[in-house]
Length: 383
Ligand SMILES: Cc1ncc(COP(=O)(O)O)c(C=O)c1O
Image 1: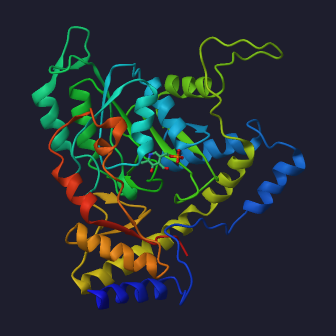
Image 2 (image 1 turned 90 degrees about the vertical axis):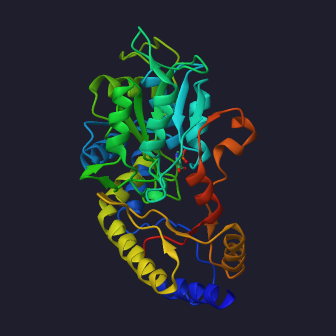
Image 3 (image 1 turned 45 degrees about the vertical axis):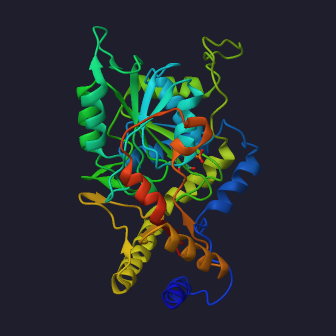
């Protein structure tokens, strides 16, 4: 086994042309106008949430994703929190999501006071399984006279569904959207990891009522910290901006607010980075795709499963993942890689195992469990 692990180390060192030293999982690349635009913020003193880069960044992301409206946020978690409120999620509702996700997905659900319900993921997309979602709703979902979908067993209203495009690979989002529509459940896409990923030619995050993106430092493009709400619905877009700016009513000098709002708008200094990053996104995605192709070729010769972009999809290959035979081999592999300065990480601990969510409703989660035991993410920065 050790010989094979060493071959992986050598392959990654050659891939990143780095014969020694630490290779991170995902480092940002600043190769464009980042410094120039940051200096512009400082020179003009527009460093806070009012400034030309903020709206420019929103326009660029809207045009890139094909969403009619894009509203910046301080981070992806805040964007998801607002998105859930915008579609009407209320305390004590249930929100369906997947257990294989980053904690922020489920924390945002918890911020609204709603309870997560966990359905399984597909092995080939690593994202929410439409079959598992449908099975759950066929068994437990019923539409009441108010038009809402309710869980027969718990009596709670199922107000939203939050699939996540894991590591940048699109899940079968059109099927998920159709199921949500049938049961009158709002679809909120967690596309935090999938800027640049499309399903059947359409950008992830644009299939439901609303979607969110993250521009955290570890993502494909970064604003340091940052997020975006994307939607085709003008009213939702307007309300997103209102809620993220303290629900302040426009007036030349008066301070009036018509509901409880949030200080969630991204500062101009972060948006400046975002604009520069958007200018180079195509090059970064091309580089990531070339890296993924080399990983795929290498692992094919080793008989190790490499997670390729699913059918009908273009993946941004945010993180390149492999599936090993079991948890023991996974742990040995992680130890070897990290001992040799190659940053590698397992998938997240499944959400229902965390103390805050251990009471959550769960269905059969065999695929998520298998992926949790076997998956390892490898260095994936663009070069
Ligand atoms: C799936 C998922 N959802 C939400 C988030 C939250 O984004 P942020 O870190 O920008 O708050 C992240 C990433 O960090 C993520 O990976």
